Figure (spheres, rainbow, N blue to C red):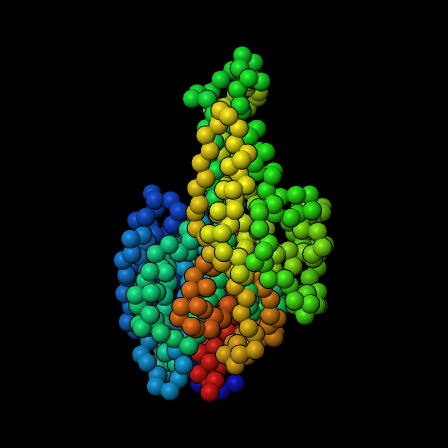
Length: 459
Ligand code: BES
Ligand code: MN
Ligand code: MN
């Protein structure tokens, strides 16, 4: 290990409890981007970051958008060395259902070496590792081996609506050789990963309006269309028993899995029994002809994310409800276009609307999937850094989640994207009891500190 890096890492070790305290301070701010009631707290988290980055000696600013603000910061340019742009998000998902949390979501709590809080792994904890590694370099050497820019947004969890425009208008200020993102997971305990592919997403809401008010189901049932019955038929029509999505032309643009990739996935030490028991399910289902990893990482999928209508309270209520609705989404693979999916979904659903029902389809965020080449020198340098931080060589994987702006980085900025995930698959992101292993937090900081050195040495 080069002596400079050695000093950086011992500083990081000395500071580990201060670093944890900083993470806890950020986690206490309920920066829930989806809920407009929390807009002041979202802004507060952005302000906390701007100030924190300034304290560490970076030039940093809060940038207004029509939505939640962005945080931009930079270290000084280093002539002759590459430029790395760190992207992350300080917004978090809503904490509901609240009664299922063992400790309150915005009161970070330690249990068994983990820190429990909304945003612990997604993405405050992971994002902060890069800030803490920069701090460690600056504190020990007053400079970094390369220039690091930060772009931290507050709208990732709601589809990065305003970031695209900012990127288009500030491409010069954000110019970089690679984008570094820690917002994914390791493959398993002790097996860090570099992710080279993500799925995209197309998200919708359906509203069905039946009669103008709720009706007695005995007096009117059988003669008036029940919107929940219509809704369930619609939702069921979208997939068949073999797990094939039924939208017209849905698979036309799907890039088939390469035989080489199928072999690589099959060669990973994936323990399907452990996976099942961790989720509390006895069996798994999905598209026939594909393995679990293939289904999760490289095949499209369909989910109903929420459903409502009728009586949800205790006991029986004989009602024919006036309304029903659902939220649903498709995960997409490279080449599938969310806008084509919207048109196709509409064309399938509209003929299913019976007399007596008004149908409304709302399209929310969409983003295409991505799969990136894995033979680049920057990626090899990143793999060395991950090995230094985690003590194990990373495996190369794809993942099923989406980070909408990754496509824009790759296509518009022409930058290479390095997805270096420090999380675990059982970190409960988007769910109650989200956590981040404190050991992974510190390993992430060490890997990040090594990353600046490894990237700077790429010719
Ligand atoms: N960090 C996740 C995405 C992720 C998680 C990728 C795990 C790979 C592994 C991100 O914050 C996220 O939740 N994205 C949303 C995007 C959506 C709201 C547009 C998603 O995937 O649902
Ligand atoms: Mn995230
Ligand atoms: Mn998320």
